[in-house]
Image 1 (cartoon, rainbow over the protein chains, first blue to last red):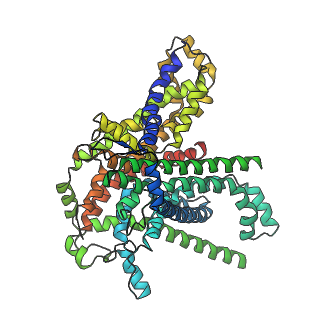
Image 2: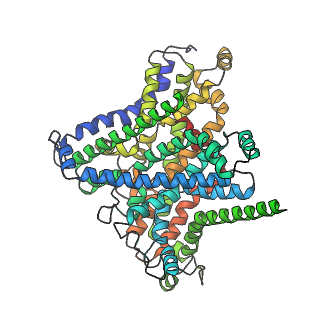
Image 3: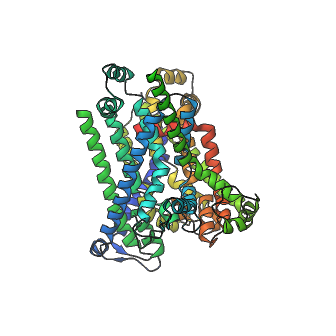
Length: 289
Length: 278
């Protein structure tokens, strides 16, 4: 369609493009530039070339942060997808009770990360938390200090995250199940296929695109985990939960190292781009089949 | 006979499993509420007793005493409403231009908007912080709102929705002498109501809940928002006074849960559309 006046489309897009430029494009440029400087926000910045990147790499910090983020994310993706799919299969039926349980699970996705973090800090509290009490009751032994033990803290953070975002996987899987034709399932049942067999041969293959979608979106989202770490563990104990965003935040606001924070953010951005590219490539491949 | 008995058993098994699931997701809220009603003595002496022996609102009084809650509620509402309203106001004309008007640079503009979907707040906060600090917008509500004034996803979804509106409807309005602004806000906006409501609610809830951006962009009381204040309640050495933290937590999560209860359908729609659209 033609615009009534030639200028119309431009002023209609102007505010949007202006804000995108000021808060997305321009900051990205600044980020790259800052990553080449040593700057503490107080004294003037000093050009250091790639020294920030080198020091992140040589100190092993980058690798440690990446490994921490990847292991927590993998646990989150695996856990929330398995739970989401199992619940979707259980809840894929009409009725109030099923609708109620679906709402209950999804509500955690709507409540803030701060609420969830504080809530589980209290539930998991080693001295007076009710989960620790339950553990003691069941095992007749001492409950582990979930958030104070570097071997357990990442999994505790992952478990809390799974509790929070399973509702997302559930909702997407439920809408994916709508696309599985009932007639095929019924035909398979008439042919004597067991429930397990029907799932393996009909539902699972047809859910493939949905599964792929949930997996990639939750992986990209869980790479950006921050709030729950900030509230529950502050990256500790002994940096066992220092994920990417927390590490960048720490560099900037606790250590006042803008250059190093920027360099780490650039690397983080690169990783997110690779993950997104992989996602697009997977979907392209899927459509091509 | 055996078949019906077996399916009966299966029915109860399924109901039981669902009960366990409901318990896993609802018990934490219940525990939050119950804890907030206990007096300090009970938190110390019997922290895992289910019901408060002497229920009291002391914890809530303590929250109101130690925080200027009215200000945080005000800040959080203004920020979340401001962002949601601004996003929709800007997405409508932009989406309209991209969906309906032919002009030079259209695919370029569209590509740019979609590309910004790749830049999350967690990447741009370092430079945006120094940018806003440079113009004195740290610790202001504008500093909290403006960086989220445009939702690339929102613009994209409005454009997609407008593609299915027939051109003839717009042309008819033009013949009647309607201005482009009238067409966008008075003719097309009502047609897109379900999409816009979902976008608005989703944006409102996510920014009401947002912790990261206000944490980065506020350093004092002035523009502090509720999630920050409640998280600080824990950090400011409340020690064992979990009833106070939980009372604050109830105040923080109730509005989000209320929106959820009232508009679940819209939020579900936002999530599934978001999913397959973006």
